[in-house]
Image (cartoon, rainbow, N blue to C red; front, top):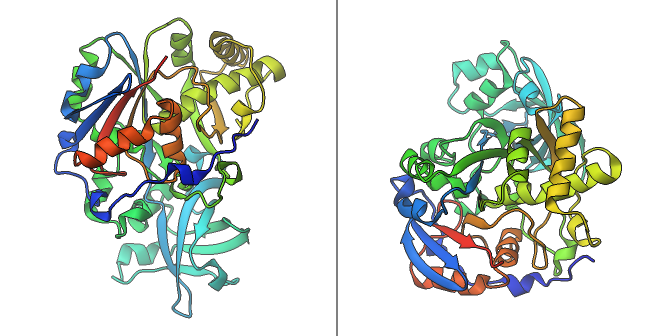
Length: 403
């Protein structure tokens, strides 16, 4: 049954001066809030290894943010902002970033009503000669209420990944109320970012330096990676009174078969770094159910976990995925999820969560509430009263799920 949850029940007052508009000078200078069995304490993030149980599995999202925001100009002078969301032609990220002359993306377009059928030219106020020679153009192929399909064309044979690096800007969250700056190119990216595709950073990972990662390894912790490309839906506010009226966007993810095998054969603590990691991990169970019942993996729907009772064990579900991959000669699972985690969700894989502090009335705050059995307000009151910084560039927390 789809939960009937009032989003207004997940509101709190977040003063503007508590929103971290910029990162701290060093990644690991942030505070760390620890939550366990209802008890709260304040620490330094650089000591996070102290709170990771030995012989755990720690899961990081190694997606990489792309400079996906582009500014174009009509012949009339009107400015049109185009925010690349998801590849359409080619439909695979690695292929579209390798294109050298033309590609199509699903985009959010600002001022789209002012864009008729004309071809747009990249806005180039500095008259940059390299940009001019590239001649990047945008054509509107189709549009609906929320997104549009845009075709990009350019000259010179440059790969589209390089085109974005030269012409695009980092799509920092709108709640920072500022334009992207040079510092965001480096700091709105985790140290271990590897696979291009996200338009938002998995911000729980922004705090880690090699010092923390080395300390965690020395405890015998297995450091695994998944890759979920974060979409712009992470920025979208919940506009409906009930969470049942909110629509989650699809986000693709990849998980290695070797990691799935490790999960099956182990009963170790699983520590999810970030809400994207935990959404990926918890989606795996339902992917496995699809393999058991339908013979193959499929995208996970938003409300799939709530629609019925599931009798399969987590081990059975994961084994079904591995069996499918083995039968098809595949080394990794590639699928998509729209899963939403709200109070009432049954966690099957993650035991601990590292995450930042999220916006009022957001789906991420509902996820936190689900993980701590509704104790979110106690946690956030503590953070507010102890000077913690909030949102993407803010401080961190580590939460242990009540079993």
